[in-house]
Image (cartoon, rainbow, N blue to C red; front, side):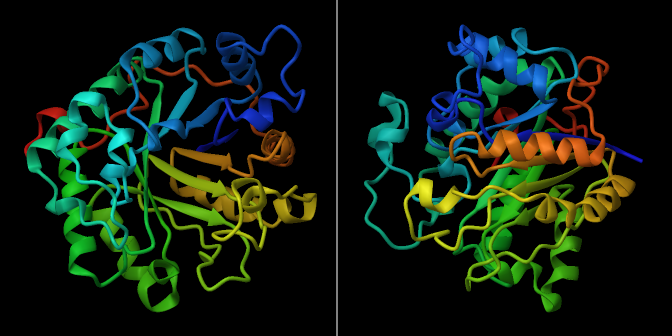
Length: 320
């Protein structure tokens, strides 16, 4: 049976910092991460969706966490087909990105040179994590326009697979059609063919955009489950409204058989709580960890052992 690692989708969220969860004297950047890594064996880096990461931060994260700790890193918005403001790019690249005009983004039609440069900077900045064996996975969260049966979506997924050859990748779809009964088998087959891990989702089931609570495993290396909370304001309210949800023990217990089944099929299962409103995510993660009997501290692993996939080359040296 694979190991189940429970954590949260952020350790820097302002609401968490101000909630009092961090002990006095541990609220600066280094203290926060060291404390978080002492409580959980995995965390998601969500800031990389909004801006490119830096190699300096990756090095600091490696130095401040124990061997075996995992960082799941969210892919930059431009690399997942989301609208991206030029201001999200480094200053020297902003002129190459047209201003956001609304409508559905078409990232594959952007300047190939710009995409090459963004991919290179994104992957290069994460190399310290990868070399240290701390990179759990790159998380690609695709937008609602990304639909099953859409040739553009399939081509873009292939494009991402080529770019990330040699790296661990997990995919979260934001369109429920991917996991509906008539599409699920095809979706699983597609992700297996691309050697990508599927992301299971927990969220409210009362909206047309709700992702079904399925728990597919498409990679023997890693499976991922992300808990967004069950607030019906998802997709419409403010960030706080969307994620305001305190999981009950009954809601968490629903997932125990699913997570254990996932662990029967994958070496690692990452269970990440994204209900980042005050300390709700860390409290839910603590409860889930207790229910599962999962470790609070990471289990040491061989250097670099947790971050390889397909044996390919890094994204920056792979042609588009």
